[in-house]
Image (cartoon, rainbow, N blue to C red; front, side):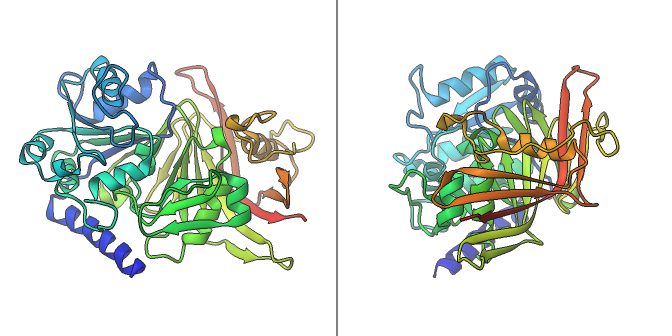
Length: 419
């Protein structure tokens, strides 16, 4: 019955797309922590929504504890930001877990169909699913969600999300909670009803998102919270489910994956402060090792930064024009290691971005293997990074901004217990 529910959901998403038009809409998927003055991201949202003075946005703040409409509410924040960057209209879509009746409100649906863009705010992604699927037990998207999708296809507009508003966009399994170490150690729990775990660090997911992004599982606040382990484990544990995926996209804070192009050649481009990690387990193996501990081998991990692109129909990468290969001009004598490879800025770590630090040292040296360890030791886990002929590290300075950027593609990763 759980599998049937997921299949019905996917079929429902396809029907919406086919019965609308052949136009494709754009997406701006932000990893959370979007700063008020990130002109590159905010201006891109407005531009893809019709341009300054023309873009008409609907704000979905259902994920928030305070959706609308006092001065500190989520809606008012997004309204003010979108107006600041040139929106002609910002409309509050009054659908939350407490107002699901508005999913069938003719006035709400009629207004949705006049818009050129939609902004999904942060908070709890499960609340978005509960708000737009007519209650927790239903696999049927609501009339309002169908109207949003049909409007996007008809107008070729934009849907933007940040944090929970990005996580929910997936057509696959939707991550809902957990941290890397406990996820790697104890595994993922995929629920077929929206379910909030009482255990803070338990890796949990729901059977589906709202179906806008059919290319993999989305995760946010990614490098900032050391989420490589949790996304890798969720991919491995859910790959065999009807809504599982072999690919995951982790978006950093104040950063966006901008999706544009026709259906036959959808492209994701990175803009903003940091990067987007792509985890590919299509050639990986996962399961218990000889000691009975979980092990993931031969995963491919890539880290895209400013202006890098991923072709979403083939998961192939194109670096920014100003970046060149590090091969032959490495500057490190030896690779770095880490004693807290899943470091999170939320957890009083010695230093954040440990995964990125070790990966960069690998590509900036002649060594072929680097290893980082979990800070937790019951049991300890190791992350082994290696490079081969498929692996490429690149860097360069953007001539337009003078900013230095580093990227890498197809680094091989193994996660296993050392105790």
